[in-house]
Every structure is written in C-alpha cells, then in structure tokens.
Length: 293
Image 1 (cartoon, helix red, strand yellow):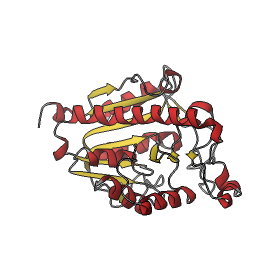
Image 2: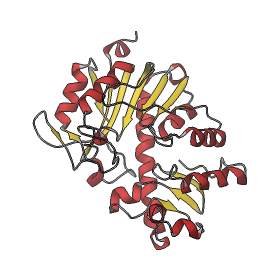
Image 3: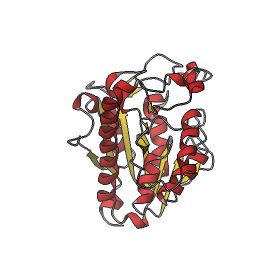
Image 4: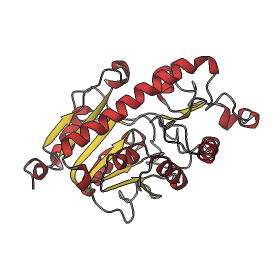
C-alpha cells in the first residue's frame, strides 16, 4: 500500500518510524515516503535475512542492535526490495479485488481477518467501503491501526485477541460475513481446528491463503517446532511450515458447507509462479450467498 500521497504531517511519518523500531511495522508492504518502505516481499523471494525495511537514514542505535539490524536492507538492494514488495502488493490487492467482486455489495458486508498483523487487509476493505472491517492478532497493533486509519481516512478496527489453540477459539469473537486467514495456518499445530473455527464465525464466505503440499492425499506436514514462539509448549510448539495438502483444504471447506470454492489465480505483475504455486488462495462461499439469501 503506497501511502505517500495520503501522509499529511511529519508527525505521521515519525510515528511510522517509531513502529518500525518497535518491530510492529515491517512485514506487510507499505510505502511511507521515498526513504521509508517496509515489507517481506524481498525475503519471500530471496530468502530470510535479506531485510524488511528500507530506511537509509535509520538511527545508528537501531543498526547496532542485533534484534533490529537484521530488519534493514543493504541499500544496494533497494531496487530488488522495492520490486519484490510491489509484487507482493499486487498479489494482496488482487485478493481484495476478487473478494469484493464476488461477495456483492461491500457497503453491506462485514469483514474480519484473524492474524491481521499491521492491518493491510482490514484497511483495504475499509477503504473500499465495508460496513465493518476488523483485525485480530496476538500482538498489539492498536496504535498502528490508529496511525494508518488516520492516514487513510478509514475506520478499520483492531481487537487485541488471538486464536487460542487450547480452546480452539477467540474469546468473545463475533461473526462476520467474510473471514480471512492470510499465511496463518502455516504457523499452527492445529490447522483443521483453526479452519473449523474460522468457518464457525463466517456467515457468508471464507478466504484462505496458505502454503500447501502437492500430496494427492489428505495430509498435513510440519516443520521444526518453536521457530517463532519459544514459549509455546507441545503440541502448540509446531509453529513452522505447517502445510496441509490442497486436497485436504478444499475437502475441509466443502465439509463445512462452503460449496462454491474458487481458487484465485496468480496475476501478472504479482509474485512469481515459483512463489505462488506452492500456496493456494481459496475463496469459498456458502450456498445461501450464491442463492442471494
């Protein structure tokens, strides 16, 4: 999301820089100025530790911190960094466009994303006029949402609650017309239970973007545990490279009553096929939506 034409004050830019230093603004592809851009596209394409932030005038104390310095790209890689994140924005925006085109009147639609990070998708749906657009996450992005809503003139809502793998729910979570999960299943030990929860709060449709295996069986593969969350105990510690088969995901959606399943294809200018094809982007609707009820 290119915010350069929306930022109206130096204070907004300084707040964005603060969130970068705090580690809250680096994963999703946002451009704040010609000298401040964030996003994981470069690492998605070229491997981990390539960098998530272009900020040539970053304070020296940030560069001297081992926990922070790995976020900042070598300035010689700026072109590749910018191109990769532009591709990532095209992919994300394609998902939003496809969902909006298939769900009907967006002004009457409520949307929620479970595992929203800095809010790219709730903000995108809010900017398109969704009646309500909500993001949930285990990290606290309340102030990030406030900043981005202020920049864009949107009213996306953040709720600091996360999916609990022990109870397979989010405490107090309501229901929404469209529920999205973007690159979340790959961090969960219980992807089918999580999928069932998402289905239970989705009145009309569900969107899933996830890495999958090409196995022609109903199966789930796991990576090494505790890569991202050191304190998660067994079995929740399996937080890395969880990949259901595409066949299992589609069958699961069908069993939950989502009978109209559309696989969103890659778009020209988006992420390369080498990245896209080991994933699946599924938008699935209940039959009542198809029948107009």
